[in-house]
Amino acid sequence: MELKHDLSGILPSSEEMDRQLEEQKMRREVAFQRLKDRSDSIRVVDFHVHTFPEKIAKAALKQLSEDSCTTPFTDGTVDQLTASMQEAGIDLSIVLPVITNPAKVAHINLAAARQNETVDQTGILSFAGIHPAAENYRILLRAAREMGFQGIKLHPDYYRIRFDDIRTKRIIALASELDMIVVTHAGTDIGLYPPVYCPVDSIVNVLDDVRPTKLVAAHMGGWNNWDEVLTKLAGRKVWVDTAFSIGDIHWKSPEQKKYNFHQLSDEEFVQLVHALGVERVLFATDSPWAEQKDYVNRVSAMPFTEEEKRFIFADNAKRLLGLIPEEG
Image 1 (tube, rainbow, N blue to C red):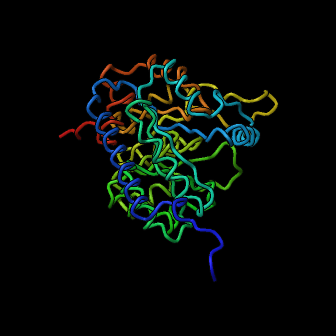
Image 2 (cartoon, rainbow, N blue to C red):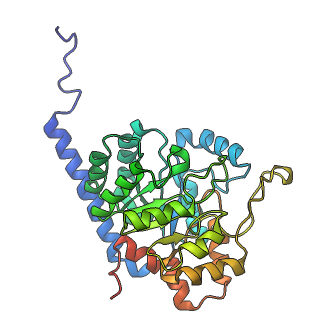
Image 3 (tube, rainbow, N blue to C red):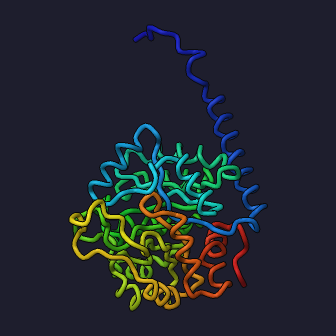
């Protein structure tokens, strides 16, 4: 069968593609090193934010807003995240992609990798996404590490696969082998119906069975499951982030308030931080679903010492990311 069109000169050769990929990798490495070089100036890290490509941001936020009955604080674009960071005094935000289709892992990660080529200028660093149903998860994870990603995001509720399912465990085990951070949604998801796919017991199971090296359980270890977090995760080698766990839930209207969902009071939050260990807590907001400036102000006003605030706002995150050395 003969080709009707000569594609030479239109599609790049394999050598040209390899050259472009190598140049992109070098730009990411240089940008991350520059970020590392100025790590002393990074005072606030938001370890949990979400952005969407401009062409789908409006539709995506509309659907998520309807599902959760809450109103976002930005339009979900990088531009509005940047403006929010400037207003809040946030120096670095970590974008966590949520992948709902295993066939889209490579495509989404390539786009995220391009974003990381300018992290030293934007202060926006993306993690990679993954899906437990992806049969080629080993190739995808190794490729993500090769592209310079510091970590991956998991969201068991969107997969409808439990966090302690063998498919998730094997991803966490390989990520630990590759020295990658694993951030997982934990507890109830405000926009999805039960069952909960990452209950606290499943985190305990993974900690006992897989022994991950850098596991972060979002939403203070388990959104609206905090009594169990207090009794089952205290003293364990797991980090938590503060995303969408304090302040008021921004319901679209009073009558749309769902179930008995609530946030931690300031007193409960401080108690949980001290129980888990201040060195295990990462400041995070879940922007656009929480306001970054409000979160910075709330945590700043809580009765933590200046050293504790330094750990929560930046130092714990910088150590996990390799921007500053581990203590000891």
